[in-house]
Length: 274
Image (spheres, rainbow, N blue to C red):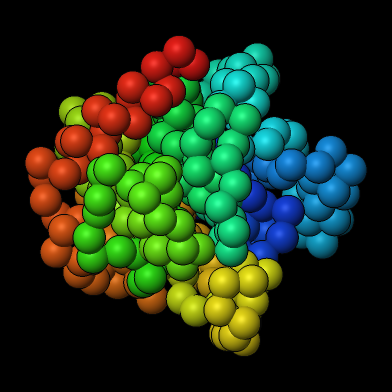
C-alpha cells in the first residue's frame, strides 16, 4: 500500500471518541494529520483529543461537540468548522448507533436513520465547499456488510413496523446509496467518495446489536485509514471496500434510480438546514 503523507492534511472524523472512530483518529494522527475529533459530550471529546495528542505527539488535534441526532446541531457543527478552517482534506462519516427500540429524533425522524444517514447527508452537504477548496479531497462513509438488500421507502421511519436490526441494516444501505450518488454528482469537483465495511469489530455497537465479540479495534480502522491516506485510491470514487479491497455491495445499492430517489428524499428532509 502506497501511503500519501498526511502531514498538514485536515481530517474530520465523526463519532471519534471511542471504537473504530477513535482508533482511526489515532492512526491518522500518527501520520501527522490535523485530526478533528467529534463527539457528543464536551468533556469526553476534549479528553479524547488530549489523549491522542499525548499518545502520538501530534499537537494539531482539535475537537468539536455536537449531537448528530439533531439536524440543528449538525448545522451548528458545520458552522463551527467553517469558522476555524478554510478547507478540509478528508471527511470520514463514521458515527453510528444501533437502537433496539424505536426512538424518534428531535426533528421527528427515526433515530437510527437520523444519526447513521441523515446527519451525514446534511453534514457532507454543508462541508462540501470546504472539501472543494482542498486538493484531491476525500469523503469516506463507514457502512457495513450488514447493509440491507431491499428498501421500503414507505417505512424509512419505522411507521409500518420497527425492528432494530432492520433499521440499522437500512441505514447502512443508505450510506452506500448516498456514496454512489454523491460520487456521481461530485465527479467534476475533484472530491472522491467511497464507503466501506470495517469488519466485524469488537465495539459497543456490535455488543448492543448482536451480543457478539469480534476482531480487535485496531483491525476496524484499517480500511478507513487506507481510504483516507493511500495513494492507491487517489482517483478512485464511488466504490465499496472491505479489508483494503474493492468488493461488491448488494444489488439494490447499485440501482441508480433508488440512489437518486433517496438523495431527493433526504434533501427534502434537511432542506431547511441547508
